[in-house]
Amino acid sequence: MNSKIRNRFVLWATAAILVFLTVILSVINGVNFTMAADDADRLTQRIAEGSGLFSPDGPDAQSGFPAQTAAPANGRFGPMGPDSPEARFSLRYFTVRLSPDGSAELIAYNIAAVGEDDAVRWAQKISGDDTGWTKGTYRYRVYEKNGSRFVTVIDQGRELLPSYRILLISVIGGAAGTLISFFLLLALGKRLFRPLEEADRKQKQFIRDAESEFKIPLTVISANTEMIERSAGQTPQTESINRQVRKMTALVRKISALAIYEDPQDARASVALSDLLTAQIDREGERFRARNIAVSTEIAPGVTINGNAEAMREICRQLTDNSVKFAKSKAKFTLTGDNDRITLCASNDTDLPDGSVDQVFDRFVRLKNAEAAEGDGLGLAFVKDAVKAHNGRTEAKVTGGEFILKIRF
Amino acid sequence: MRILFAAPDRDLLSGYRLLLEDCGHETATAFDGTGAVSKLANGTFDLAILDRDLPRVDAGRIVAMLNEQGVPVILLTKARLHAAQLLEPALANDYLTYPFLPAELTAAIDETARKAGSGEMFTAGDLTVDVPGFTLGGSVRLTGAEIDILAALNRGETPQTRHMSVYIAALNNKFERLNRSQRIGFLPNEGYRMVMNREQ
Image (cartoon, rainbow over the protein chains, first blue to last red):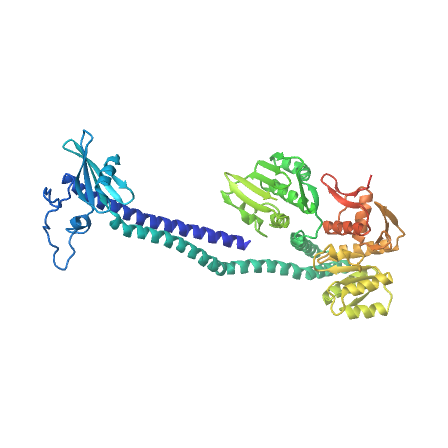
């Protein structure tokens, strides 16, 4: 049971770490690439302002590249990126003017990786609007000037390289981080849950010990009380002792019964579960009527299970008994399935708040609404053990004022 | 009746000795296995009540000895009953699990003595149940509870006893052991019934 909780914890914690890393790394890389695009756009904007030629301080028809106007101040960084005076040395770009008559003319060409003819053809193909990326790392800008269309393309490959490296590192780092977290949690989980598992084991051991250690004392007390009654007559005191001894005897027997169907050597046979459940609901009819509980059933006929007949009968008995005790006005029983997959579901209306109430299956646990009703908190614990012995699963929850107890075989 | 009560708890022994004597039984007690064996060697008993966890001598050996002598025995056990336990060759005539009430033990004593003293025989399916001999089909040993279950099935009643599924499992195993194609099945509306699988 606890290994299930532990595995679930490890999976959820790993998923949380994965989501966290994904969000953080996506934001970092997203911002990084947006800023790179902004830098590129500022460069192409500058070129557009220069009618297709790069000019930090205005158009220079002669060279397209005016002399450096501002030297960086000593010992201090000058303007960076597109504003840097070095931009004109590092900028690789071309501009093509597309006249309305269809002719194209290369008006600026400062790039080694693209041939002049290719540049013209490339520009003609760019039909998108305003700005965008083309062929991966090239940023283009389309603009109108003097009745002509201009296309400027700048190569941002070198500028984007660090960004791509960060992206690659992020993906690898994120995956590795998640994987490492998973294994750490797996190792840590064992340690984290050890006290819990220990407590669970101790609780079971305690119940077993207590049950075992009560057996002989109870037998001795009842024998001696009987003897007192025989020699000195019945008194209210001996009667009271007898009552309490009977109660405890019944409890100890019930705890023993909890374990009795866990044994695979106990008889298994084909049990007609549909008929069993129907018969049991019929049997409880009187009690349901007495409490004004409307019972509805959806029981598929002919559902059989290979199991212990006694255990199956007890499961049905506990489910109907539970509904009799805790339903407010409605109870419903459904049984579906073929022989591979059987689902038995008992539900009733309740005042309990929404949520999982799997603790009803723990020994001696009784929910808030059970305080007034008779019981010892062992019935559903028995159901859980018996279902588990038949390789089934139990589940209990409250949704929208309805208590739903589901058993899957 | 002369009864031997052997259990490793002195309070239990003294309490039940008084009680059984009050019921008119002559009672000897033993605290361990050797005590029980020597008491059995030095006297005749009509019935023995043994704790399964008796120290020094294994209770199973004492049960085998008593089976041989034809002395009925009630075995008290702290552990829960297993079908495998009911298939052992040395079988007690009745099993009681702690905790039990005085009325339950005295009822078990009376019932065991009654069965041992009766000359009753009946057939369950194809097999003969020898009640005083506590046997099925002449050779396989039965407990009192199993005899009661078979008798109830014969009468068309639903048997009522604790550890029902354990006894039913043991009985079906015993049928198989005797190569009989009969078994006790569970019918949803009727409960347990004897089912015969006769070949056509």
